[in-house]
Length: 363
Ligand code: ZN
Ligand code: ZN
Image 1: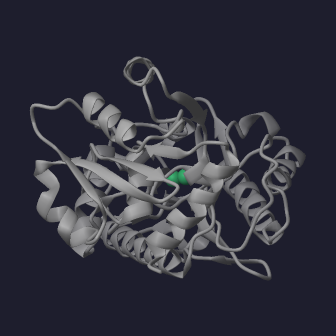
Image 2 (image 1 turned 180 degrees about the horizontal axis):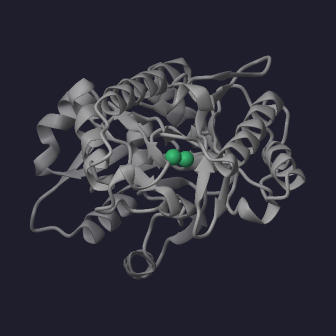
């Protein structure tokens, strides 16, 4: 059984447990996960006795290469996706059709319901997401490659940093360099935030020069083939202020303690609580205003989230970011982000680019 067949087999059981006869998979990363097909605008109808991928003529050759043997329904340009989907479901003769409520628009669902008036549509959430939580060996290897690409690119860009470069220029260089090194692309538009801008956890890069302030926060990652990495480092320039030393050391300590807590069986919210406790004890509790981390895989943000409201117990094969931060409006923020694999006995930090303050100082 190929790894895609194994995934579909597991999903079939989940669909049955959800009380449905078939699942219409509309999230394009989920379609990739289940078939290996990397194009978009294509839906997978997973029935009890098989599956069919609904796509269009642009992808015929790519489909043959990426998922040979998969049953295909190639929609003609004159046939709308809605009509093709309804026809496919009708032919499958299913009574209860499950849909992915997280990825379908209300309009599409309403229109599909009208066309399939004799069928019962059942909204489901996270059926494929549950399978994607734990990565297999091949997926972990791909994430390792995405980490390696991101780290090589960061090292190369940092070696060429000069104070007159703007946030935007550094972000562009990172994007270009991850590609040149071999990744498909950056996994998201990099964040390069100088001084006070770093107080915005998701600051878009501007024309500010990186030498304007004593430090710059860089959050970036690579998509190598299909899987992603996601890292954050603070790069120091010149003399380090006492305030930055304090903030950074608290964040670093919070991150170290959280990573030490990661092992199978521990609830995601308990790992979050470890980091939050360290930051609160240092007097910055209200300044850590986001969750501790998130899963990475085909998407930059996927399950499991490490947050105070997530009970999910960690399991071997999960890959999560651990990214505590302290943000002081008007002054700036410090965040450190690494990618961590949950192993059978504990965890393995996949990222290795330097993060001790004395290692990240630019000359
Ligand atoms: Zn990040
Ligand atoms: Zn992240």
